Image (cartoon, rainbow, N blue to C red):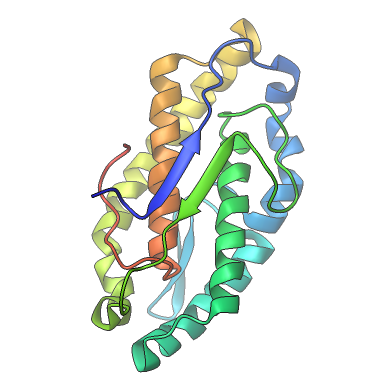
Length: 207
């Protein structure tokens, strides 16, 4: 069965925009401020644990709403519709922004929920929510976070290498591109799980 969170990426390997790639970090700053950069921050034992980046202004709101949702789901089995819609909005925007920042696309991502070559979709949980899974979510996700930390490290290294190849040769090495796209999928699935959008455990997979 397919995982309920999917990320589709329209490949952009050849004929890349060298100029916007050269200044990608600067161009991505507005999105970084709003939805964060590479990585995800969670609350753990009263302190913040960061895996490679920040979540931005909207991400901070999404984390606070996830804390509220933790109580509503554990106590009443209910994920408030308005909170869920905001979180989905944030996650879709974040997926587009990360794809741009990590050089998967050259088209500038929209500010909001508009069409883009990278799309994130989430299937609502079928049936009652798994309250025990939600109650223990922070503990359950630790192994995945640890492994993903190594993926992030590799992702950053390959992206730096890809930056040079795009600026010099105008293309993104295909093998590295597919790895980066897989890392993006892993990241979004993990964040959807942490933000309580789904109950299925995210796979240890780039696919």
